[in-house]
Image 1: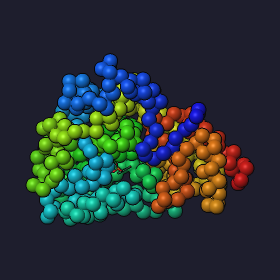
Image 2: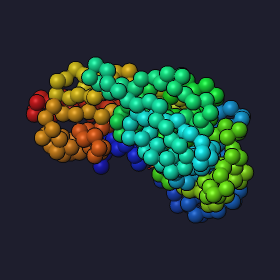
Image 3: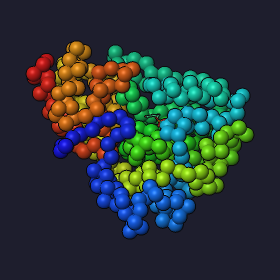
Length: 361
Ligand SMILES: *Cc1c(COP(=O)(O)O)cnc(C)c1O
C-alpha cells in the first residue's frame, strides 16, 4: 500500500528511513549472519549499540552529567509503580497534577504505595478545557515528589510551563512528547517515557534520573525496577528489550541527522497549526481544548454530527489515513502527529476533512 499515513496514538508510526534501514539489515546485521535480535546483550556489538543510543539521547536532550539514562522494561505504566517504589516510603506524600487520563492513572497506582495527593486539576475557561498553574503555596515542601504529565495523549491537553515546586523533585511522564522539542532536563528529578509514541517500538521505556534520587528504593522494590541496580548494571541487570533499544538508537540518529530537537519543534509546530486551523475555521469540526493547552502531538476533534463518525473512519481509511478513531473514553477522532509524521500526512488529512465536510456537512 502506497501513501498511507498512520495517525495511531501508540504504538505509532516510525520514520520511513529508520524502518527501511532496519529492514535492510534485519537478517544480516553488520555482516554477522544474524539479526540484531539474535545476539547477546552482553556481546561487544550490542553493548556498542546500547552505549551509542544512550550517548545520542544525551546529546539530543543535553542531559547533564549528574543524571543517569536508563533503558527499562514496563512501558509508561511500569513507572507509575516504579517511581513511588524508588523514591518514596509508605508514609511519604506524593503530589499530583491531574490534567487528563494518564496523570490520573499515575495517581491511582501511586495510592497503592504512598499518600498520593491531587494538587491541581483541569478546569474550564471560555467553555474549553484548561490547565491552571498550581499556586506555589499548595506545594507541601515535605512531599517526596510532584508528578505531572505535560502531554496528555488521550485528551490532547498539554502545557509548556513547569510546576513551581520549590525543592520537591519534579517527575514527568513524557511518554507522548519526549524528543518533540528541546527540554531543560536540569529542572526535573525524573523524566520517563514509554517508547512506543515518539521513540521506537513498544517494550521499552526510557528514564532520565537525577543522581540524588538513585539509591533510595524500598527493600521490596523488584530488582528489575530498582534504579540503583539498573544504573549499576548499565540497564542490563536482566535481559533488556534489545530490538526496541536498537531501533530507538536508529531513531535517535535520524533525529540528529534531521536537525535535532529545534528542527523537530519547528516542524511539529507547523503540523499542529495546520490541523488546528482547519478545525477552527470550520463549524463542522471542533476541538474541546483551550488554545493555551492544545497538544502538538495528539489532536482530538469531534464532528458536529456524531452519527457520521463511522462513515468518517471508513472513508478516511479508504483514503489511506489510518487510526483516526478517538480514544474510547473521549469519542470522536484523534490524530496523533508525532515526530515521524511528515507534514504531507497532515496536509492529506486536512484535505480529506474539507472534502468530507463538503460532501456530508
Ligand atoms: C501511552 C502512555 C502511557 C502508558 O504507556 P504503556 O507503555 O502502555 O504502559 C503512560 N503515559 C502516557 C502519557 C502515555 O501516552
